[in-house]
Length: 448
Image 1 (cartoon, rainbow, N blue to C red):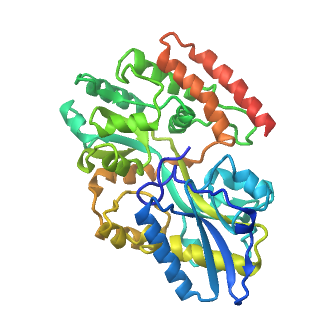
Image 2: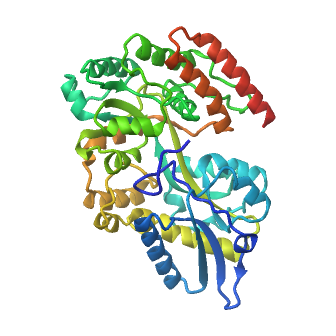
Image 3: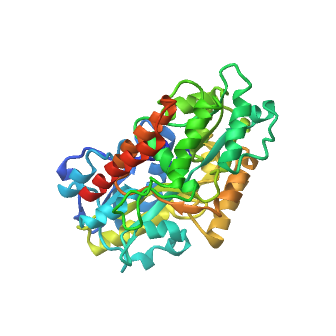
């Protein structure tokens, strides 16, 4: 799954793919003017006026600096539509430079639709500054097939005002699931429809959060070889038992269940929810769309202390691209997304002027001096209470970062059933739920 949105204001549920005619896509090659032409996707839609303007400004400045390269951008939302993505690849309709979720990288390589960037990546000035764990996502059998653009990790969003009202220290968010359960119970005791902790349990989102919670316990959804489910374990049992007990023993999750992300965001924005799991990109949505206040919303690391789910996106290059097109693509990525403190994602001064939130802890793409520069420019232009996210910054760095499992959406659909059962049935048999879900996941993995 992804979080929600497009760029720095969002980060991970963000996406972009277009139903384009064959003639509009694929390798453009060299134009008659002698320029190298590349088509790229994930241009912000016209409805996103600010992002659209920024993208167009940056594209224009790139072409001015590189008069030998012609960039043809395709817009629309989402950037990548799962229903059409494979068909575009197989039909030769994909752009020269195309957007992918982290979880799609291996699949695109396996079906032989990505160019091998290894011989050219030294020409990407920023490559060595990118976080290794993000680079590894696009590296298969020692070869580089893509470039990460953004990344996010899951944490715990909580309402500082409700913490204070419940007699809790808003500067000491729960570090364990036991502490979270105790805090949720105190918050729910405030009454007046207040919910201590909320979780998703429908539209595959319950399976997504089960995965994040399992990672936080030190477990995993599938085996290292990707062939067997590994949810019927003490860690998997602990995830469901905790949800069951908060729902039925503590009554800290409210009576309304089968929630999805919009429901939970609405609860948090209205000031009636204490905590829920999310990435930093949710915070501006809670403020701009759901009625929340930046000063009340804080972010902590995932409870449990053993791991967290990460996601994000990047760009790959069409296997049909020529060497000149590959080189042009890498120059474009450097300019647009991968220069610390500049470009579409990093021009914080421009974002602040446009009243976009600056100062959220993620995306955090770089390491070393590049990260220091990026963070310095971000801090200088921050317009949100960065101190509310310090616990997340400090704590998440020590957690084991894991991407989503293979066949994630199919697996999440199965796990939705287990999560929804414990939240809607007091007598749910957790052992049987895990056993049944394991069998179904094994079947999904066997089909490949």
